Structure formats: structure tokens, C-alpha cells
Length: 229
Image (cartoon, rainbow, N blue to C red; front, side):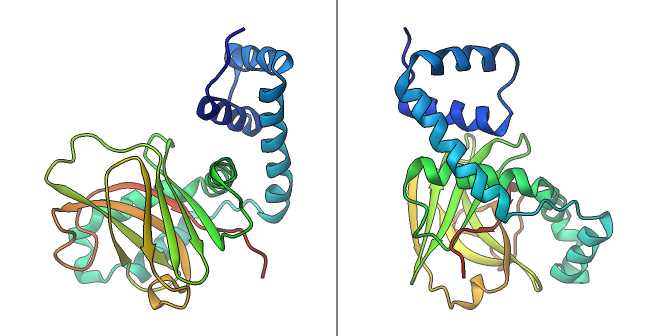
């Protein structure tokens, strides 16, 4: 019997529990889980993680006027023309609930969830997870690169906070390499107050020259609280 690697087992189990693994692939996975006790345990772990998360997050389908209002508050009228591609990229956030659940699942697969204040998965236009970002007390943000980009030589990836009001706030540059980047930022830092979502833009080497996003949005995602207040 073919055995899956741990990463593959977690990825397939997550898709299975979310319901995105379908057809023959789903049938084959179920057959493997019936024969492999360890794989069945991975599935149970993902199922145990889904139930409380689903109960704490209410799905929301925001109307178009909400996104227009967000755009008008975040982007000064004078800078809109230069950043149209950025704001169009915010449409990636519309799959909020699914992204939140995937983020939490990826976090559970990687380590204990009880020490994180919030977690967010940043997905690209194809809805594939690219990064998982988590915030920890008192002053640590972990950015886990799931899938690096190709063809970004001579450019930098910049991480942005999308707040409830005001313009995007930069948290600095993130290496385009698989693994974790640790960013020292206090939970009381003004840049992370009122955070609704996070995004990565492609900027000139060294970061945005204007203090606002200038390049295309590569990935974005909503923030989901993990630790109860």
C-alpha cells in the first residue's frame, strides 16, 4: 500500500474535510484512510479542528456597496488611479469564510493553535494558499511561506495590513522563499490595530517607494481570531 508523506497527508485530509477533494480523488483517499490507521488519525484531527472553528465564524456575503465603501475609505481620491490594480486585488478577499478555515487548518497542521491571537491565509487569484500569517503575544508575527513565486527577480514582496479605516500599512518585506519569517511587531503597534485583512504586493527592490502599495497584489486574505478574548 502506498503511504503518503506527512505534508501530502495533511493537505489531502484538509481538502477532504473541507469538501474540496471530490470525485475519484476523494474515493481513493477514503480507501487509503480505511487501510492506513495513521492517515485516518490525520483526518480525525482535521475534523476535530473544523467543528469549533465553523461554530465561531459566521459566514458573511457582503454586498458590492461594502467593497466600494472600503475602497473609498482606504484609497485617497488622488492616489486611486495609481493603485487601481491594488484595489481590484482586494476582490480576492471575498471568499472570506473558506480562506479563514483553510488558514486555521494549515496552522493546526503546523503547530499548536492555542498561542496565536489571529491567523490568516493569503491566497492568490487561483485560490491556492501562498502564505499563513499568525500573530502571537507579546510582539511576534509569523509569516509562513507555503508556495513561493517564480519570476520575481529584482523585486520585493511587501506585507500590508488592510485596516478597518485608513490606508494600507506596511509591515515590511518578506523573503520569497519557503519557510518562516518572524516579524517583531507589538500587539499594541498602531499598524496592526483594526486589522481586517493582510495582503502581499510585488514592489521594486527594497519595497514601495511611496509608503503605499504600487505593484500588483499577489495574494490576500481575511484575518480570523483564534484566541478567545
